[in-house]
Image (tube, rainbow, N blue to C red; front, side, top):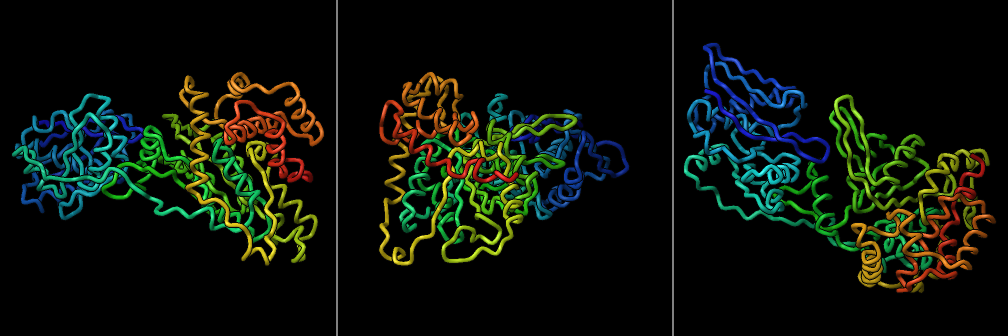
Length: 509
């Protein structure tokens, strides 16, 4: 008897339909899987056989053939365990095949028959809705992801035996999946950082417009503290953003078990020893990298020059385009990567170049090589570049605390609302992401204001891209002030945030 069960395959951050066809035939016991299965899929025969027997059901002592269609799409992962097991039971008459019609089935099985969670179920649920399916049958710990997607049903159980009983009777276990997750926990407050008012202001401007930020300074000036407090002043994720962010984390297997939707903006801080693949994504079975896991949030690169130059250069296209394109022989995958890049670096390898209190032990050639690891094109893509100075010892106790993150966040949210209204017909966006032609048209500079900007470009030798970046930052400063037009004061402040531009950092490159 032939049985068919609908399942799915993960391709990038989306899912595609896969039909699992099963037949039990012949007299010699065997188990064959065809349709471009990877090793983890072929190994399902061991888990499926043990699970069926542990559930008190009979595993056929005949030839089992499993076909995963379409056969030209590579199948990877353990999500086919449950559909294969149900297909075998349907093929030998233990469950009715019509009970599986209209359902997408995914789930990993343990040797004891437990239905374990799998990655990418949120994408599978979206696919099920797009193809008019009734819903998804999965493990209990994946139920929250399916519940996020409106218009489809979720049927979940903890063991294979429960799934079989529910398909026979139509009564499923009662579950209350948790839909939203607070992955980051309580956010550290910006008021924890003593002094550094200039840097806090730059952080607020960056958050208001979604700008990339570079902080340079000697050790202990608060670069990492400021970076880790940036998510706390960013506005909450919009519903469509939350769905995309959650789907990326689901594909990567990083959503908490039993939870389906992220509400906080992600913060990723990869180590400088990571490879280009770990940062931008890829691999034999392409997965999202750190820049995609930070989509909608912050990608923090500490000790920026310690990253290999080739790794840093691989970030240029994702930062500019907002997505990573990975080309393979059979397919081209795209992963979202609209992030705020925040980077921190020391002025030299020992960290004390320019310090009044610690002598620098680096040779001039060593400092030049260290700074030369950062290319001009990469630095041009960083809107705000600031220097942090050490806090005098007496100010460690007496420095003003400054506004709390909640207060700053309200100003940032208000600035983002102005941008949303300005770019509503473009589908939204921030000052850092909208096309420059639209920013010029919707927020033109007065001739006198533009003249000051052009004079600064000529004096400091900045690139045309820096011209656009300064304009964008100035627009964000004006939004924080509630101003309709960008004035010379906003241009002047934006120029202060270019002190570590290409001319300063790569003069010897």
